[in-house]
Image (tube, rainbow, N blue to C red; front, top):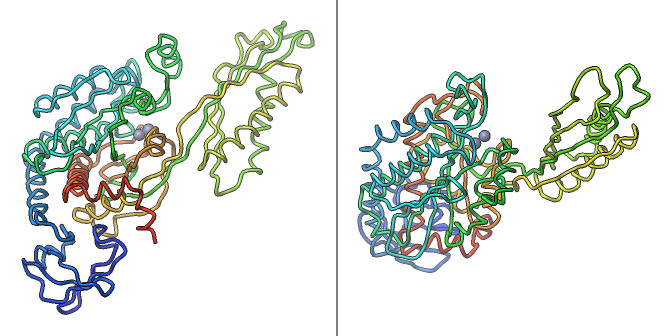
Length: 487
Ligand SMILES: [Zn+2]
Ligand SMILES: [Zn+2]
């Protein structure tokens, strides 16, 4: 927003609620209805007052309750401030309870307990450990705020669980604290009856794509069909009524208040590869077929393929050998490898996956071994909803310096919200407050307020902006008007 004398020009960047139009204030801006000129057409709009405009807060088209929006936002922020200590305590408690995907029973219990304490009805057992709480509004829209339940393995981390090696080195505990913070802000402030819909709090299991033997076991028992928690929740129909979903993720090595919006992530498929040769005494290798040689050649073949990958496709192929043989005195007859094939688009992943398979099969043929390749779906590339991201960005500007708001920087890695983002409008901005790389022993919360409380405020206000004005913005998002906003 730029100001010029008595004229205030609201650009699209300043407020998405006035998309694609430049509005010019034709009279003094005070707390009253003003006449604006939009593309030659006079329109009545309401502004709160000049200072709130200059703070980029609550600028809306004419609505009889537009003054209420500022009050709603104020009440929610005050409620979150009153809960700041609780929110930080939830973060610390969850950090101290790291559990791996589909095993997050204690974490799930904590989330249920805290939601109930906030007076929010919840149900459990979704995708094994998932928890759903709902705050009812007065309309039919459903906006979901997500937090991931699971930890990752990093045995070297000082806070790692001694038995499992699990630790919240991906910051999912902070997501859950922020999600509970949103719940507290909306429940305590009593604003839900002012919102045109419900807010769904969904604690989702098993985002990290690890510990797959356990998950295969769950598949065989019929408890899950998908390795990823959000994929499983989609399968169970948990998002059928959801109109939009949001969550935040920790931004590595970013201790200060900062926000990254609009980034994408890589998708992937996972491969389990088994080479089968013939065992023989190691001193008579000519009597056997060495499966380890096939694996070694396969790795070389995969490396040779790299020159075929285009920069923009961001292909990553990273195999590991999970079984290299049984005893050193025998020719290995069974060697196992795992690999991901990651990429920026499903098309590129498919092509790189075929290249990878060819290298593996060729390697087996070279030494006369057999090979079995099982390729299973990983996650889809993340496609963040542009308009929803812009609203989050606008809100973030209330709390974070403009030079700490980064737009369009892709995140590394892959996530199961990628799958969700292809079926409904989603965002997953990354937020500061953390030191160390993700999944590393150095990862820590740098500042509890920045890591836990600020994201709660940003998500809560984003929810408010989606669900005020009779849900005008959520309706626009649903109608797919984001293309218009890009122009
Ligand atoms: Zn992670
Ligand atoms: Zn993560």
